[in-house]
Amino acid sequence: MLPRRISHAYVVTSPTARFITLHLPGGFEQFAAEVGEPAQALTLPPAPAVPPDLAALTETAARHGITILAPPPQP
View: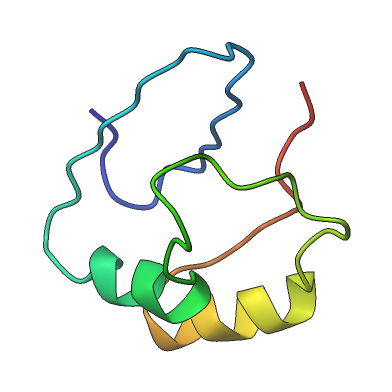
């Protein structure tokens, strides 16, 4: 559990990891839907060729009350 306004990040290093989160209050799913894209198949997609546009991601996050402090940590 993380209280509000506690900086955090996740790094998954296992090829078989399963991860579930619960976000309260609701609303995070709207951010995820805006920055994500629908799956094209019921398999894992290939890794992206380029990293996400951090400026655009930060702007979108701000509209949803999320502050991105830095790029995610690397494994």
